[in-house]
Length: 400
Ligand SMILES: *Cc1c(COP(=O)(O)O)cnc(C)c1O
Ligand SMILES: [Zn+2]
Image 1 (tube, rainbow, N blue to C red):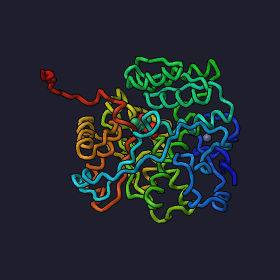
Image 2 (cartoon, rainbow, N blue to C red):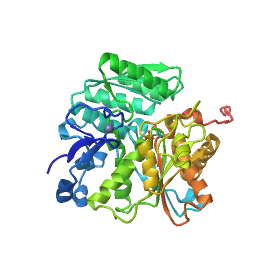
Image 3 (tube, helix red, strand yellow):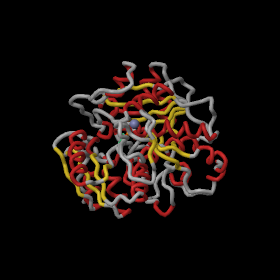
Image 4 (tube, rainbow, N blue to C red):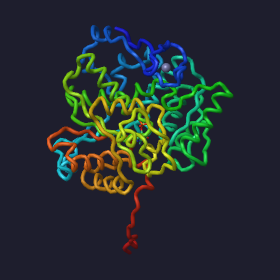
């Protein structure tokens, strides 16, 4: 048995192929690259049953991950987060099988750890010593911490408004952190200049091909946790879109392996804030890619991405799965964040709350049916965003 059945990289736009043992960024045509596996080899040698005695991290799926040697794996024990039934909330919404996949329990407090463990491990494998990336906070936090563990130097640029805790996570890891008075797209331009001038590896979202592979494990886990039955609907808070592209890719691969039925595929939903909804707008207009969203603003910082490099892949996943795009307001998601804590004891991040607010709307419109199995992705811990909760508590005097 091989540790990984990674075969090569390919371009979904122009079909060029690349060698995964080298350092790769975008295709020469400008498209992100995707990872291909030796599916025939996998089908012949890899059975679902092999997972039974494996460690409870996402590396349990190492055959379908791109790191060729176990020696290069940089892990903090990430993955296999709980898939929690939320029946109280389900009753209120009129959805009988409603779940939250809770990524708040993962190292660094957001699912960005999935992309980082696989991305940093592969970077180490191909000899990267120094990397740079723009971030809205969580990705920078995860990549700088995993880079430290791998002995890789990291340069992180984030907006001044990004959640303070993510700034601290970068700083304490020893990353070279800079703040920019602007959006993630402005941070991206600074990183672009930096990598060009200094020849540093560009770890920007989708400019390196491997974080998708880490994030796709959310899709594999959902299938495994439901006994290899896929849900009817998966709702995902969509920024750069890597998570939803990954989940789509994973489920396709599982179908190819015969691990899940070829007859049922979940309808994938891209959830965005009405303050930054380029993917939703493109989906409504039936377009294949999105336009830059001017003056984007939302409290759900992780999904404040005005133009995603992989927009065409997100939209393909929506169209191909009969899914949809939906936007909700910050007020709606904050309200849902509070109700989830009230009803379920779950303190989810604003982005995660957005998916439940979206499920509510889609149930009301009839797009989601009462008896369907619905999975909402909570992409991070609510405790990373203490300022989203406004409280007014009386202070008592001690009793003498
Ligand atoms: C980055 C992020 C998202 C968006 O993820 P993509 O895969 O880039 O679409 C959602 N929620 C949180 C908490 C994030 O940090
Ligand atoms: Zn190409």
